[in-house]
Image (tube, rainbow, N blue to C red; front, side):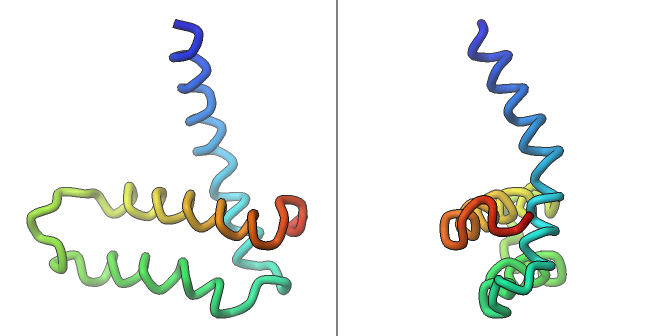
Amino acid sequence: MARRIRARGSWRRLGTKLPTRLWRILRSPRVSVADKLLFVVPVLLYWVLPDLMPFIPIDDIAVTLAAAGWYVGRMERKYGPNAFE
């Protein structure tokens, strides 16, 4: 039962800190434009062209959060977790 509570707390922390971490990465001059486009282009295409996957009922926000989590993790591994502060 303690694991379940801890897992919920970690999802809450991820949800509250992810936008801040993403914003810092996208604003950072250390991150190349190509790395920034690696997140921005697929997310914008998914929002603009939702009919590419008409039979998969995934919400735009869920796709954006999944892409943001992947992107933040990748950029923090590439540049270091403290590189954007």
